[in-house]
Length: 264
Image 1 (tube, rainbow, N blue to C red):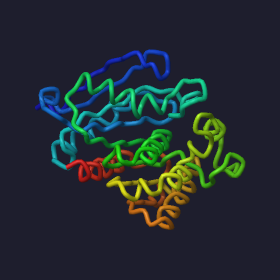
Image 2: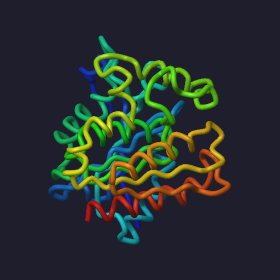
Image 3: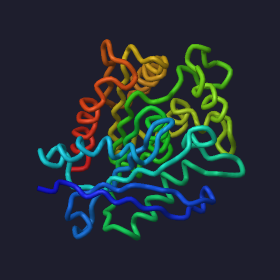
Image 4: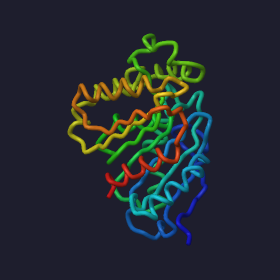
């Protein structure tokens, strides 16, 4: 029995002034159903929309068991260096692409309702939290798996151990206008929009392995403690003896169950 249908397309993006490739995963009859929710699936560093191929069995299982309602799942290919799901001063505008332009484009191709959720892994987890905290009333839920976030809220305060290699590039890129570092820093963005986050129905899930090779557990713990201090309801899981990409299928299954409860 066919459980899902994968569509591989591209479109010209005004936000990044180039053609962007993307994949859409949906139930086999999804294109004939009126008004499905949209799940934005954000890939990690050094990856592409092909990441959705890896996630496909988990979505199929979630649909088969009923923990996730039928949905349109979309993943766009975005770069790491020069990308990072950040809007740069004079472009390109990668956050705008995934958060605004891609959903608007998909609405012309598929029957969508008003419900949206966003899920991301690593760099994608950073992008997912940024989208959700910037516009919390737009999303039903956000799930960030080992998000690439830091245990500090300014460029110079991020410890050296938390910005190895590509994470150092991300730390510097976060200072890009028009938002500047504060507008690209997940914890600061939460502080700035705290009233809207509190008033929204946004459901938040964050997980990270306590053996994360890139020390991302520190940033996730920082965000977790901040949400506790700010009295923001959320689901948090520190995974014992778990590295950056360990237990990926299990963690994705939990995330899809979480999103499913919010979208049901």
